[in-house]
Image (tube, rainbow, N blue to C red; front, side, top):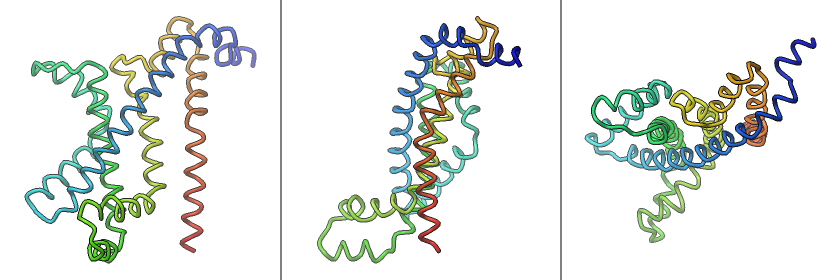
Length: 224
């Protein structure tokens, strides 16, 4: 038991490693604040375009969404970071991570929002148009608010997954929380920094987990 505590719960190592773990946590939060809004904005745009009736626009867009939902984000990240330099385009760690998450999360947000848009009765938009609202006003003030409300648990669940997926940025040496924890582990030869990183992720995401659970419970209660 003492050996286990020394390997995973070494307070001295946790205190010594905390400064670089704190820097990594800041990078993780900054990365989440970058990729979540970018992915959500792309998802809104993709979802709106996917509702268009023109086949020449809709079908290629749906194919693109399916492609980026199917490709694992880690594979996409490595392709952008390590593959594009062979074509003379070096995005760097931040650029590769931002674009990989933009494409992957944007595709997932788009599919969720498309389902939300389709759940809004068509009569809502028709009534708004009859009242004199312009098409863009109908989307912004009538359709999208109802669509977001209908799929809010799914949106929050996807956001939760996006924040957790920021840890894969460590494979391209972006100094986020997991990367810094691995660096501290390699220096101390101890697993305590990894456990501290796991605790930091838990404290960061637990409020969102509880909110998601409450929304899901409320949704189930409303369906009964």
